[in-house]
Length: 355
Image (tube, rainbow, N blue to C red):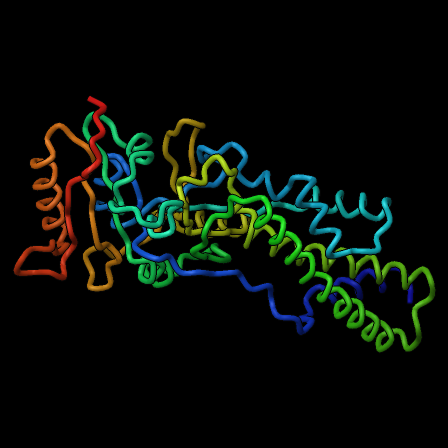
């Protein structure tokens, strides 16, 4: 087999399925409603568009987003599990391969889970002082309580093209939990690797009619290692990198809708229909900020919105009445004594004043 034929042959392998299930996400269910804290402008935007913004992960307020997954500590844990017998030189080669990998575009929409707070007996879900400090201003603030079982429904029904995966995930803050996640993914790759290698050998023998020589075997092994690393690395980013947060943010008890998109595919879809763009942009603290609108279907019977907490305000009663009227003008039923199945609108009980 000449070199050109070997290159063509090895390229075929990358399209094969090797029989090992894809790494499954460690999913959980929130214990209560998920709350999205926002400003008055944010509330109006959400209700007007019936969607919530999933912002590109590089433009969030944690400057270490995605960097945890690239840190030497977690990289070493993953590589140790995946390639336990690798030499120092091989380890460095694997590092270089990782550096060459194109990271997918990741967008996230954030929520707070008061049911899983560090103080689980919290008496005021959707009414957290730390969040009001971050999101309310002299005109007030709001938290929107969503049913976690329904919040993904709008996204799945929209079926926007260019998005490769979407998940509702709890953020990881603790160092040991992050380490265990890195080991778990590396161990999955270790199970995957022998199947890749065996499949490549079987097809080489079938194509060439002989056993590979030493040089060919080394190339097959290197190709198998690279493929397994790529598959594992892909799982690493999609399932874990976007949910790693610095421990300083632990009080937010954050859950995220994580959308992963291939950059070129997303651009192709976006540019194919200029009248219906997939990516939007807004001015932000960190520059021109890309985001994707996540449909919520607020005026439908499948709306996930269950509660609105009106934040601390000089004019609490007027603010509550205004929100109720606003919801009704959008076709959203409001809870009353005679209509208990509508959206509950309440005023904050937190004695916070910023005016």
